[in-house]
Structures are given as C-alpha cells and as structure tokens.
Length: 211
Image (cartoon, rainbow, N blue to C red):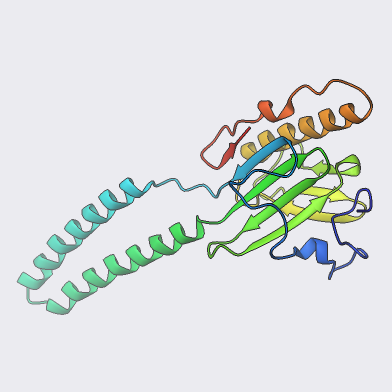
C-alpha cells in the first residue's frame, strides 16, 4: 500500500477506484478484525420517530381519517371517504421507505496498519476504502454548518462520510477520529497512545462506537 493513499489507488481523478469504493473488500462487521482496533465507530442515519412511535402515529392518523371520512359519507360525499383511506396508505408507505433507508450505515475502523471505511446500503451491499493513517487528514468546517462535508483526505483523494449526521454529530466524530489518528502517530514515534478508541462513545442516536 502506498503511504497516504487508499488501497488499490492508481491515480487520482473522477474515476478513482478508491473514491468509488470496491465491493466485497474489508472486514466483515461483527467479526474479529485481523488487527487490534484503535478506533471503531458505527454511523447510522438518525430517525426521530422510533418504531413504537410510528405505530401509535399511524393508529391516531387512521382513526382521525376514518372519523372524518364518516362525516363526509354521512353528508353524501362518499368518494371523499376513499380519499382519506388513500392518504393513510400514502403516509404509511412513505414512512416505510424512510425506515428502509435507515438500514444503511457506515463503519470507521482504525487498526495498527490502516483505516478502513465501510459503507453498507439498505440492501446490504457493501463498499469499502482503506487509508494509510500517516498522511490521513479529517476535514470539517469550524464551526460546521448544515451542509458542511465531513471528509477524509489523503494525497489528493477525498472521501465524504457521515453525510446524514447533524453538524454537532460531525464535529463530535471528527474530534474523536483526529484524536485516534494523533495517538496512532504518537505510537509510531515512540509515544504512549492515550487510548483514543475509548474517547468516542457516540453522543447521539446516529452514532455509536464499539471498543
């Protein structure tokens, strides 16, 4: 692996394979990593309405729509009754699609040899990128805004991660990963690592760490 470049990266450019990701590479989530991890985080899209809240919301919405539909049915406007039922179905399917997209997640793992980023889509398809930590930089606006990208940069290549995180979550994660990389480099120079993996526990429902 060339220092500072993602694995299997011939040249930077719009078709850079390392920037696109390579399906099937990397470790399998939930299994032991080949080397001890210095940092291990999982990033999830935030969902403000939990499954139980969704069920309660749909029951209330269906009840209100049914009563309103009965009122129109009583007045002789029977087609309106069907439209109220259609509205409930549309809301239901919209929420189901939203929850399905919430199955996607990303993992960021720093081992003694490299940093591995894995992106898993709602269908379980995986792409992964590897970086040499020595030259890796974590870029984020200070302070971050709603559209500020959280990016990993190395030798002209850039990978944006955690696009679904809030600005506060991005800042929290960036600080933790920078600390882990700083400790990793200190270990190379003979310093004593401060255990950066313990510094990031995930302060919101969208982020979590396993150490």
